[in-house]
Amino acid sequence: MGAAMRRIHVGNALSAFGLGFTVPYLYVYVAQVRGLGSVTAGLVLAVFAVAALIVLPFAGRAIVRRGPLPVLLVALVTAALGALSLGLSASAGTVLLSAAALGAGQAVMQPALATMIVDCSTTETRSRAFAMQFFLQNLGLGVGGLIGGHLVDTTSASSFTLLFAIEAAMFLVLVAVMATVRVPRAPRVEDASGQTGGGSWKQLLGNRAMVQLCVLGFVLFFACYGQFESGLSAYGVEAAGITTSALGTALAANTLVIVVAQFAVLRFVERRKRSRVIAAVGLIWAVAWAVAGYAGLGHGSQTMATAAFISTYALFGLGEAMLSPTLAPLVADLAPTGLAGQYNSAFALVKQLALAIGPAVGGPLGASLHAPYIVAFLLFSLGITVLAVRLGRQLTDVQNQPSLARSRVVTQSGAPADAAVVAEA
Image (tube, rainbow, N blue to C red; front, side, top):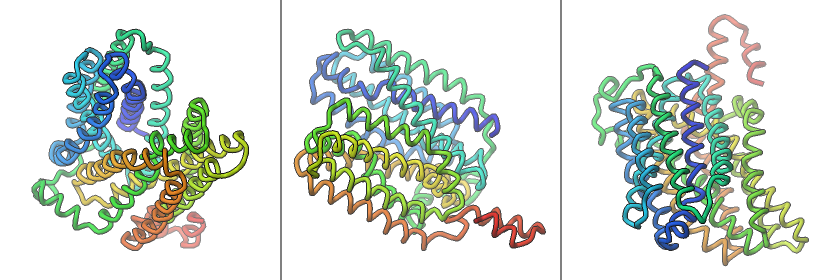
C-alpha cells in the first residue's frame, strides 16, 4: 500500500466517522432540540437523498473531466459548510438548505474516493483496496456513532452545535490531508475518446454488462441496506417484539461480523468468479430473511425470537463482507479508459435510488404486513442470485475472475501451466 492509498483510506475512514457522528441524531436534533417537529425532521432526511440524486450525475462528468481529487476537495468544503450551518440553524428553511449542502457533499465523496482507489490500484490489488475501504467505513460509522452518542444532550442545543462543528472541522482537516495525495494521472475523456458528457452516458447505457450490474445493484441495496433502519427494524419491533436494546445489539452484530470476517472472506472471494460470489450472497440473504420470518412469525420464546433477529443482521453482514471486494472493483473493470468516475457515479446514483425507495416501501410493509414483507424480500434475495448468474454471462473471463489474468501472466513468463492451475485452487 503506497502513501497515496494510505491517505485515501484515511479519507474513507474520516468521512464515514463524520457520517456516523451526526446522522443518527439528525431526527432528534431537528424535531426535538430545535422544536421544528417530526414533519421537518422527516424532510431533512429526505433532502439528503434528493440532494444526492441531483448532484451525482454532474459529479460523474466532473470527475471524468477534472479528476477525482479536485471534485473531492470541493465536496469536502461543501459538506463542512453544510455541517457547520446545520449546527447553527434554528429555522426550517436554514435547516433544509444546510442538510442539502451536507448531503450533496457526502454523496459526491463516495464516487470521488472510489475513483481515486481505482487510479491508485491495479486489477490485482483492487479487491483488497475496496475491502479495506469497506472495513474502515464500517469502523468509522460505528466509532462515530458511539462517540457522538456520548457528546449529545437533548436538553442542550449547544451540545449538537459542538457535534456539527467537530464534524465540519474534521472535513476541513480531511481537505488538508487529501490535498497532499499524489494520484497517478489517469486518462481523461479528452485523452481517451474525445467524447462529450452526453456521449459518455450513452456509452454507459450501451454497456449491457454495466446496465445489468446497475439493476442488480439496485436490488441488492433495496433488499438489504434499504431495510436496515426502516422495514426490518419495524418488523422486528412489531412482529417479533424486539426491544430497542436488542435492535441496537443486532446492528452491532452486523458491524462486528463485517469487521471480523472481512479479510477472511477476502481470501475466499479473490479466487472465485464474481458472479458466483454475488449469487451466493443472494442465497445467504434468503436464509437471513427466512430466519427473520421465524423471529416474527414463529411460535418460539422471546429469547429465541431475539436470537434469530440478531442472527439475521449477522448474516446480512457476512453477505456485505463478500460484496465489498466484488462490486466496486467490477464497476471499475467494466469502465472504459478514462470513464471510471462516470461509472462510479452512476453506480452510486443507483445505490441512492435504492436507499430512497427501500425505506418508503419496506417501512409500512414491515410494520403492518409481516408475512408478505418476509416473503417479498426473500424472493428479492433469490432474485439477486438469478440476476448474478445472468450477469456472469455478459462478463469476460478476466472481468468475472481477475485471478485468471495473474495466472496467465505467470504461465506466459515461463512457469509451468500446472503451477498456475495449482495457484488458482
